[in-house]
Image 1: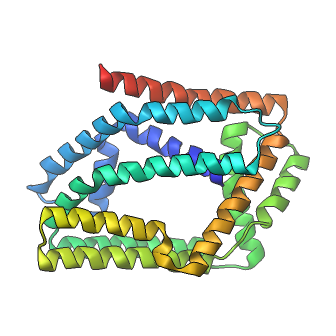
Image 2: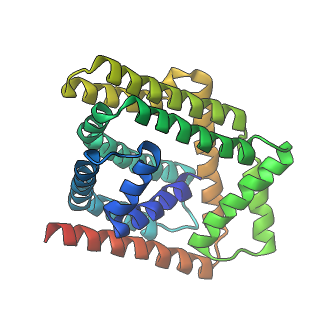
Length: 280
């Protein structure tokens, strides 16, 4: 969902920031399997990126979360939520742009074996995706999606009544559903990434050129590689998600609204604390 996806991303960010470079290094290493020479400078790059993000970006995250927290949930509109989502997405893209030089260092250091490791890891992830999202009837897929959505919703709003759950199930099922298209888009991103890494390994371009290539890849992936049907599907999905969250906020009871405000405040507090620590 547009807002909840953004807030869930913040949740992941909170876990990552509170555990520092360890989580990010572990995640990258699970794909690459770094050698002894790579490990020290990869860890340093991660530390530097975290320091930059904490010092320059987290205040903006806190401001966005505060704007969401202050809004009257009973009158929030789909367009307001879409604007919040776009704001958050822009901030994520700013981080990827800042990370491009460090990613270029990594790409230039990869061996053919390590690129193979990445391919194997991606295929394992794809096997899990196929099992979870590409099996069963439309009704089963809708039920699976609804349960994942409700798990997020309950975190931010607390429990829901049966009447609320029934309404949310209707709204959830009304959203576009095309897991095959999503998987095709996923494969396209992965194939383009592996092709890029292999090209860098074979041609050994300058660091400046690799930075440009990485930024070009991110922009293309963000635009779904110009695939009109994919662009239309993801745009309609984002719109439907925002409409669902708006309705969820409209139906929220005073207790649920209080739960939401308190939970968002936890993120605001963390963002401000981490930003202050980085600036001290």
